[in-house]
Length: 268
Image (cartoon, rainbow, N blue to C red; front, side):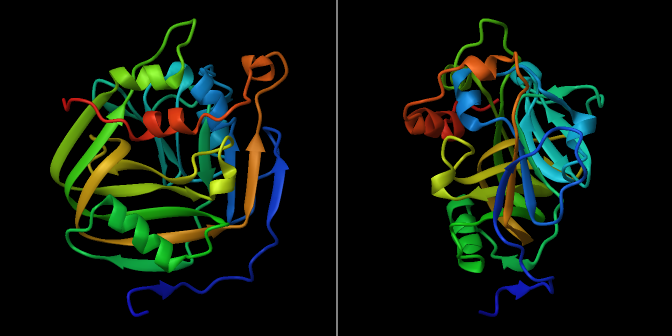
């Protein structure tokens, strides 16, 4: 397969799952660390649990949201960016907290040239062909120029928090054309549903740091993707006394997840 190049790497580690308590040592390469669970977020667990300054200890690339669901998060090259529902982008104070985020110390091993005109579904299929081990997690970063990008963000919520599927009905959707930037996120196995988003979960940040958010669709002009196969998944759970410990997280929320993650709305 001439369209991909495997980057030299050290031997793979054994797959591990563990609970990582905030404040521990820096995770090794090829490790995803996630704060809380997607099931808790769907149910309305929006209170921040870990400060952004602490989150950076766990990885230099990632995605997530902020306390009270105040916008979309991108962690790129170790910097945390916040994309708010008004379309603005900022670097929040290190004390700003997140209720859920997913980060990795990005160590790519596979490089994949991307085709002009490639849309989101074709991009995902290309990554799947480059790294077909679907029972493993991977972190993905694609840098390039995009002929079109559609993103969304959501506004900060007030208690009592509504479930996420209701919040996204009022989400802000933005479109840009002819923009350079970075697409990044994770592919997670189907068996991880309830803990994280199965399949692809991608966010975007423009090179001028003025546009971004949760990706709904895109069309590529030119670019290259890098893949970091991840053989460890570490979970940081909210502490005792938080709403998480008392929530009903049972049942099948896959339909709500699909609506919350893929839902579109009028463009601003």
